[in-house]
Image (cartoon, rainbow, N blue to C red; front, side):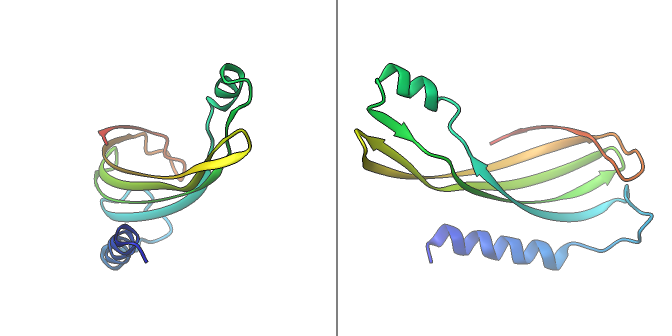
Length: 128
């Protein structure tokens, strides 16, 4: 198992351990939180690359994973850290795979939240 994967797993486990639980009606409470998600990494420049290289260079979509944790200071403000990675992103030249990329991102955010019942839209500002 690669070092970064072990580190991500350790951070996730610590976040789960320190995250508290809340009652069903406490959706805007202060305190620690943790979340994880999956997705798909898509190269939106793929069509442009294929057109400019006449199809010689191609990319494909790949799986992605993220984990986040933070502290909600007020009902309208939280500070958050996030890790996101996309794994095994292939790059082909004339049908032959020449590279396989993996990307990692670490982000720190301030989340400005609109605490409305269970739905909480937010604006995240940060650095990565």
